[in-house]
Image 1 (cartoon, rainbow, N blue to C red):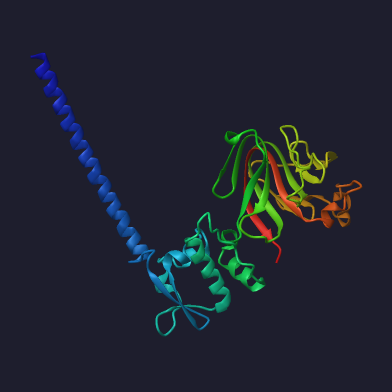
Image 2 (image 1 turned 90 degrees about the horizontal axis):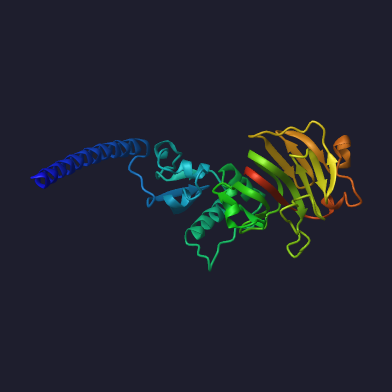
Length: 320
């Protein structure tokens, strides 16, 4: 008798749970339907597979919507997301009109097309480009997408000691050193900016750009600025390091959220204020002094970061 009652109770409990799940599923389906309606109102009846007819400076080109939207966050992706189709300029045939040089725009489109079918065996290199092409990319917010950078570990204790997430955000649980290098292109970096998170230790600066040089023997106790041919701002010890030589900076203040900008000619800024320089014309800020003080101006440099903590590369500028 007790077993029968227990089975009946269990059956009833299962039925009740099934009804609750059915109700939750119906509620979820209703919410998804409302989302679909909102998307339809915002973007209309558009799909990534739509073929868009473009008039570029008087010349016709047909492109898939997903090709134009392939670099997330760019103005080009936002423009052709489908949300603004009705308000975009069109020619007499109803084709989207863009007042740009056709050759430059075609280079950009062909690069995006090639990236869509890229494989590890056949990687796609970024176009060499001209000033006009670079300006077009900058206008559409696509420079970082076409000319990306990556963080190359130069010293880490193990693979679990750091994480690099999308957007070049570093979370170094232990002391690590990274080189900032071009990925798939050779455009020369002239400056970069880093936003600080919670940082326990940070040395950020430059090293001579020589990929065959084995002098960069970073370790648990050394980072950028500690060894020959490297220069760095040390935010913890409030100084600039030049191959291990320390030059103190009075009143140096950094905090979570501060942005450090480094120009590869040898200048460091914190939240827009110049705090250190290798340029003798900067007077008292010329604190990188040694028999090799002009090395920075004589040799191409590569950005490098030694860190324990969190930081995010937020901007990179290239030589035009």
